[in-house]
Each structure stands twice: as C-alpha cells, then as structure tokens.
Image 1 (tube, rainbow, N blue to C red):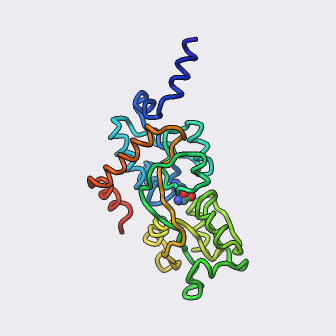
Image 2: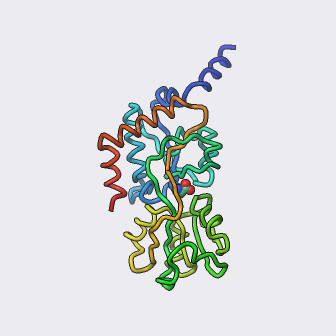
Image 3: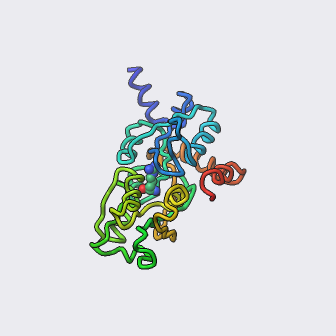
Length: 247
Ligand code: ARG
C-alpha cells in the first residue's frame, strides 16, 4: 500500500533530507562538559560544540534544535532517532565506531589529571597512581573512565555521573585524582582549581573528538566532512576555538 511504500522510501533517505524537510537540525549532547557544552545562568546552552552546531544549521538553512541528553544513553538515543547527530565532545573509540559513524575529528585531546595537593611533586604521572591506596575518579561511560580501568588498573576507581562531582571529590580531599579530557581540566583550573589542586596536563591518551551519526548514511557524512574542512580553513573554526578553548 501507498503509506507503506512512502515509509520505506523515507527510511532509506539520508538524514540530510529529513533535516531539510523538517527545517531543523536536532543536535544531541550532554551539557556539563566545559568548554564544549554548558548551561549558562539563563539556562541557555553555550560552548564550542554549540557554536559549531549553530554554524552547521546555518549552512543547511535550518534551525538549530538542542537536545540535552544523559551521556550514558547518548548513543542509543541517536540510534532511536531522538536527534540527528551527536556533537558532544565524543572521542572516537573503536568500540563506539562499531555502532555509529564518525565524521573526521574536529579536535584532538587526551586524558589529564587533577591531583590532590598533598601529592604535589610525589605523583608526577598516571603510572604513580597505579596502587589500590589511591582513589581515582572520572565520569561514567567516558574515555576518562576507560583510561583509568585500562592504564591505572590497580587504583581504586570511583565513578561519578557528572564531571563536577568527580572533580570536586579531589578538591574536597575524598579522592586522590580525577582523570579527564584536557580541555575540561584547563577550564576547571582557570575557574576553581587554581591553588586547590595540581594539574598534570601532559595527556596520556590519544583522543580524536568527532561528530557521530547513524550508520549507513554516506550523504550526511560527506556533508559533515566538507563542512568541517570549510570552517577549518575560512576562519569560522578559529573564531569559535579562540572564544572557548584558547586560553
Ligand atoms: N571525550 C570523552 C568521551 O568521549 C568525554 C566526553 C563527555 N562529553 C559530554 N558532553 N559530557 O568519553
């Protein structure tokens, strides 16, 4: 029947066509990961990813629709079409790449350490934390958590739902170290860490961050990679980068 045929046709189309038809780009992210996506005092979403997402919507001639979602379920939410794309500082991992497609990386980061002051000069690398007597924190379902489990396996790991909780644990002295992406730790130091925690800012993992979309959509992927190359070379990326990341 007619409706059934139309459904199949729509399902086979690129997400790009759905975006153009609906007039909106629905972007999935989890606010709280400074400086990529945060909520400002007026409750608006701001940050590096948010500005690039707005630029992307503009390039498509559609409206930007933010969809704030829990990090833990962000990939399942993409797969079940709660939004069109994940723009949330997501690291390309081979495990995630089995479920989604990633555009080319838009920035490279790595894991760094916020260390309790009492360990100043004694712990100088993640390797020194590899002992059950040390409590190391990070955020649930992130590459920070994966890095602790694989590279500091003997440490006592404590998982937190948010970056804020995990990092404050070190400030409060309840944990010895917080392991997380470099840009987050840079902002944390600038805002509240100075004099309170030690920053081991040499990344010990290699982490390309990229936008994730549903599998089987080469048209959308092609748009994204060309859009990224364009903004990286025409000054738009640089303007947004300088606003949020360059300190
Ligand atoms: N890059 C890390 C990862 O992919 C952390 C990203 C967290 N992003 C966020 N919006 N909370 O696991």
